[in-house]
Length: 267
Image 1: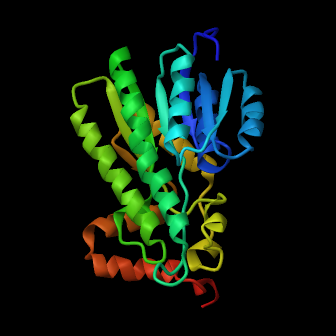
Image 2: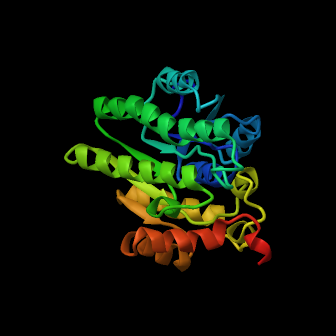
């Protein structure tokens, strides 16, 4: 991306669909040029769609679950030669099912690489970049699943608990700087997530879900306001997140089980 624009620049990962694409649209509508990334070939279509809003868009197709993929993205960021005003670290994946019997180990290790290792790696690069330039904003897409034990999404829930804790700790470390950290915590949202995670036959997978565009709008507004986090979407999400903090772990684990157990959609 050549330095031809006076607009701010926002980087969005996982931007080929779902919440990531809607976050990119929020940035574009609010006057930001974009650098978007995904491992999916759909990232090129997303870029074409976003250019219709009148902003400059560069796309990077890279596997952010790998070290090389994150470095490729960061190289594109630095090669842009521009101030980076915001980074939305949104790329993530889920794996659903019985951990002891049904789920695939490699899929779960890949989840950890994408949901945990990649955000730490990319943050290490961009936060130093932002401190050097005098400020910036970082948004992490976590989940209300990170507030509770998540049976039948055990590795996914743990990954989001890590991400939330990491982000809040970093926010505190950066206190007094001009770099802000915000955590977006959606509940069940209408995206490809549940199908890709193998959760179609669960109660939560079959339930009515929040609109990805609304979730992204709430996340964008929280980021721009400098908030530490936002539980986006329905009132139900806020209740579940509060319960995750207030109730004993065995209780909330059982509540989550009723939503995520394979076959629960038909019970």
